[in-house]
Every structure is written in C-alpha cells, then in structure tokens.
Length: 287
Image (tube, rainbow, N blue to C red; front, side, top):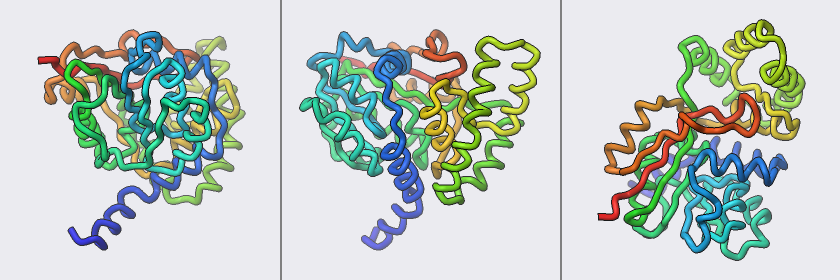
C-alpha cells in the first residue's frame, strides 16, 4: 500500500476516534482512586496485590487511571492509546517511573511478542474498526502462562439497539462541543434516574428504564463529572460495537486460551447500575 493510501485509510478509520478520545480524556477529570481500583479488579480479575514485578500492558489507556492503579501496585506498565489522551496519562502517572506511555495503534503495536505477563483492555476494543481483530492482535504479546482480560459493551434487546444506532447515527457527525453541551444538559436526568434505580419505587424504575431504551447512553453515575464524561464517551466515538458472552467466549477458545472465566457472571459493581458488560479473562498456555 502506498504511503498516501495508508494515510487516507488511517484518516478514514481512526480520525474521529483519535480526536474524540483525545478531547475526552484531556478535558474531563474523572480519576477516583478507590473506584478505579475496584473497577480494575472487577473488570480484569487481577488482584492488585499480585502485580508487583509483572510486565503489564494497558491496551487503550485513555487518561491512564487504570495504568496508575497497576503502576501503583508495582507492575511495569506499558500504557498505549491512539489519541492525545496519552498526554493526560503521562501527567497522571508522572510520579510512577515504572509506567511508560506510548501513542500507537492497537492493531499495529510496536511491541515484542511473548513479552507481557498481563494484558488488560477495559472498554476500548469495541471502539476499534474490528473488535475481534484488535483482540487477536493482543494475544501474541502474552508470555506463555500470561493472562489477558477484556471488558466490552454488551448486546442489548432489538429496540434498544435500534434506538442507539438511530441516535448515534446523528451524534457521531456532530461537533464535539455540541455533544459536550448535551452531556451537561442530560446530567440531571441521569442522576435522577440513578437514584431511582438505586432506591426508588420499583414501578418508577421500570418506567424510567423504558425511557432509557428509547434514549440509551445517558450516564447514571452518581459523580456529575463522571456522568458528563460517560455520556460524551457514549455518543461521540466513531465506532461502538456490542457483543455477547457466547461470541466473546468463542474468541478466547479460538485463540487457544485456557482457564477462561466469564467475569461478568460474578462481577461486583462499585455503583448500582454501573459496569455491566461482557467481561472475560483467560491464560495463554504455558506449554
């Protein structure tokens, strides 16, 4: 492929992703250490107490909050993101000399095969042009006996999927400033809905859940900063694929990973209604 074709392909496939996540993570301050640690452990299955001395890849680090968790636990962390979010990750992880931040494409990482004890990707691979291809590109980087964990968006019922496609068909073409303004305006709605889901009347929760089907993507997180960030995150990225447990379990089997565990079946959530997804971990055979 000629250089001009490569540039054209990159701009077509990655430009919106690169710009939206660069804006998101450099603008929104959402680090919360206790929640980040709990989320990291729930969505990777890795005990932070066991990471010291291990070589870990954060595949899609964003602003670096999970790299910070792993680095604070004593791991040597390589943090990768395609966007300018790496600037935020560098700033956040500056006190940790064992965290190394790299701006690169997950599909074409300049990293040595068989070199990582742990690989994790939390909410990232479904924002690439092809989730399965991105997953397949990571597996060879694992050492024999190493573990990989991924967390992805789940596939919903047909109505919710159709409405999500309808709204995102418009929002992914809008200026980022418009999505930010919408995220701010929708924040009180998300907070009200979150409170009702957590402790409100069941009948009202059921009513509000129907509205969520018609306009999915508005965050219910109790922290207003996180709500705005999450809503922006939902409506802006170029790609957003949804998957099933059965589908992702098959991926792990087809690349010969062993000791595969569906973390989503027992996953605890730091906040009610937050963190549901397709979440698996598995190991590369040591033989």
